[in-house]
Length: 100
Image 1 (cartoon, rainbow, N blue to C red):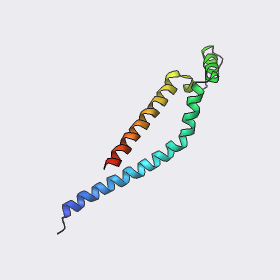
Image 2 (spheres, rainbow, N blue to C red):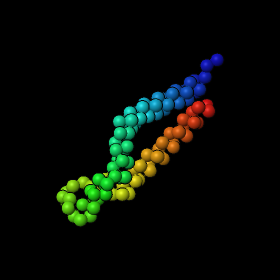
Image 3 (cartoon, rainbow, N blue to C red):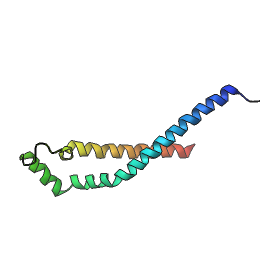
Image 4 (cartoon, rainbow, N blue to C red):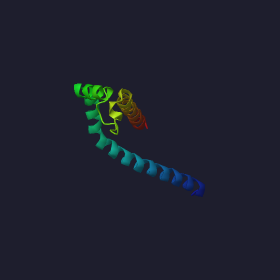
């Protein structure tokens, strides 16, 4: 025997799951494209070039209208930390998904 209420609940779950999968697919595609940038930023902050650029900024040698968030130690560090936390969360989610 069919149950209308059950079918409606399952339809809601189906729609929520489909939306989540589509959103994750888009987000992962964007993240995959940014992975090279993340690696480049990690290399940059550890380089002598970053130190030179940072020191030039400290001496006031860079144009006043130049965006310089990349020269903020906290900015890149926090971005890389968030990336690491995101990777841990993805591993946890994948572990949970394998258990089901």
